[in-house]
Picture 1 (spheres, rainbow, N blue to C red):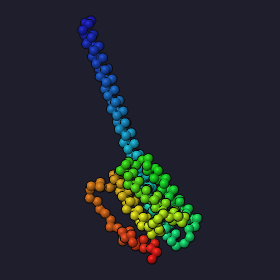
Picture 2: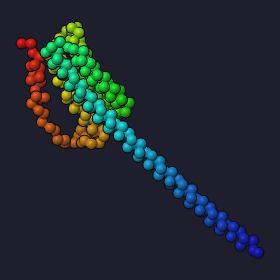
Picture 3: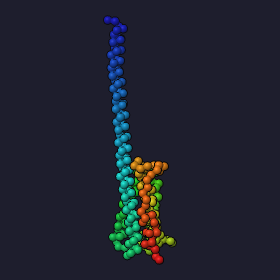
Length: 200
């Protein structure tokens, strides 16, 4: 038997087996990359759903807190506060605080910046109302000034909502033209609200 023919045969068999192994190894790598991509896509979806849920709850709780502050002001104007009135405001504040804490852990800076401004305004008005409730207001703090500050919350809530919608990709960027709803007369005219708290 010719040694050269044997070497060629061995080389051919080794090449065939080596080619099959390399092909299998390449397929394994491709499958691994595909699985990694599926995991990345699923993680992105999960993260988006987590943010969507958090944003929905934060927006709802911020609106409810702002409404509870307004209601509390009207109760303070009309009658002596009862324990149920105080408890209602505290419960709404606590629910909002929990959502705010969650948002701090999942939202990007583009959402946190306007949400932080809203949080500062909500807690500032809450503090002002509590000082008025306890009969210990700071200079210039009145039911009317608290009502004016409470009315100013709504644009902050709207700005925060728009930031959350942009982060989720469900609204146009700030640079793009967007359709704006004309505000209702009562929400665009702060004097109609604060007139309710005018002492004159």
